[in-house]
Length: 437
Image (tube, rainbow, N blue to C red; front, top):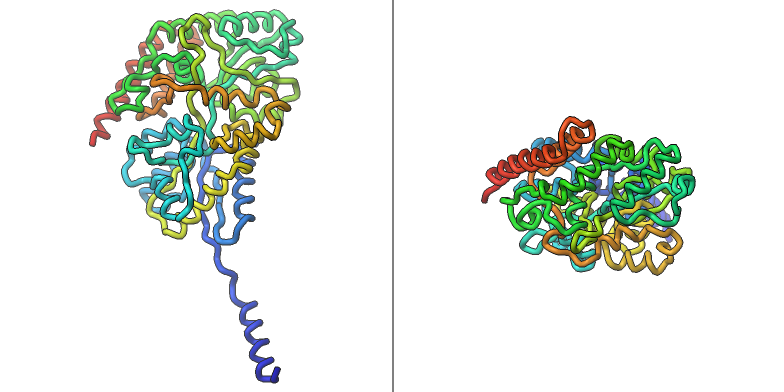
């Protein structure tokens, strides 16, 4: 090599070293995951970012589900919405009705040239996030359902079989009485009371929560929670409350802390609570199916989806949407889905991930961890397919307000259920008027 050539080569090497590396495209992801589930979200982003060089997922905690939705709406109007927004199932109908706010996930995947098969997802999950035209509108992420947790050590101390969870509501009351007699101050509590004791309760017993297939068949759906069965159940819980067998511990997931601490011995809440229990409980615990009333025809049926999905916000660049699609493809991988399911208790949203988890022996080694899946994959009916209602967040608040009046002894169960139905239907009528095409 001549000295001129050597000088030129040296200069090119120096120039290449001085040039900045190709900039990564940042993808903003707003979420509502806290504690152990927040760690999971951060790890997913970190692992995806390490798997390739073109895109960087930037997860940001934006408060509770309702707070993050409110923040996203404001950001969208200001022109700086995130690329990905985690929305809980309660907000699905509202997001579907908001024209131009989001891009259907099926379209995002297609435009990116990536294979996307909605039939790969567990049908009860995919169906909930699919529009009437058959297009999947949001990406199933932390899908959950309601299950029953109990403290095996407390059961043993109360003379109950620690390996046998109550399967019916009469058995729950009986177990609670024995727990109280053994000195337990909080035998049973429930988190997400509207979701667990009205919404999931309805599907589990194959009765309507709302008309029009629980809202899936039209905006003119109306609540139906003032039925004899709903009244019977809330009356039973009210009686348990008066006897100190059921202790109300607050709204949302607040009551979960009382189970992890050992204060409350039984709780109905999300399957996504499993990661917290596994990490923080200092006692033996069990996971079981929701209790039911054995004299109700068709019960138990199946539970409905909870948790959240990921919505792709509109108004972004094609390259950014490509990054979103690549991320969704990554977290759909069976091995990634299975690891997330084992870690959090959220459902493995694809059939392949469920089969991989089962094949690994995880369910045998951790009894009860398959309960959420088996509750969801039962054959569904028009009364148990899911609940998709407008203004659902406000309806949940009404459920909380009215049920709290019952537990405080200020309203009868009948008065509360009639009020939930009346107030909820007013919101549904308002939503229908605002969104008539």
